[in-house]
Image (cartoon, rainbow, N blue to C red; front, side):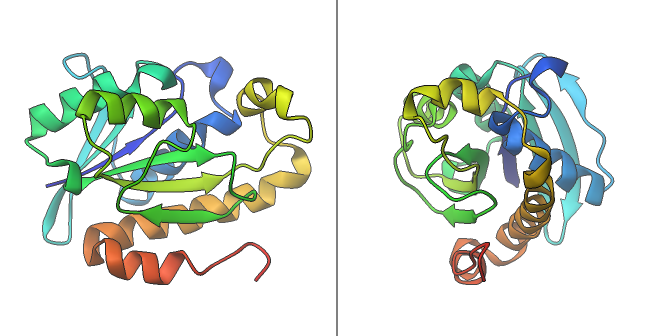
Length: 192
């Protein structure tokens, strides 16, 4: 069993925000696999399930708001009996250039509050994470407003390409594992 969790904030008002790129990627992955999400209040998330190669795959979109993502992720691991090593969390990253996709097997939160909540609730940093670069605002004081704002029209093509890369990265992680996926995806840059 493998679990892929997209981070974001529930509700239409946040739908297209930079902070919701994790939701966007996992929704794109679900469409590509013809998965329909259903609300599961026992884990505070929208859930979709399928078989992917030799694995049962669960996709999840926590409905707890970003800063409380760990509550839902802990409940998901318990319900589906998934170890942290079989978890992939998809989220935004201010420190990566817009559209850059980077996957790692562990690490700190890097200041991403949803990731910090997951680390706190799981009691470990040893889980896979796929970060999608959203870039930084020119004024660091605007970071909170920046992540909750939508992408600019001139950025949308880059974001669409990043979502496609991220979907391929998720599928590679499921089928080939973290090491081969890192070798394939972490060498890429938007400028290549």
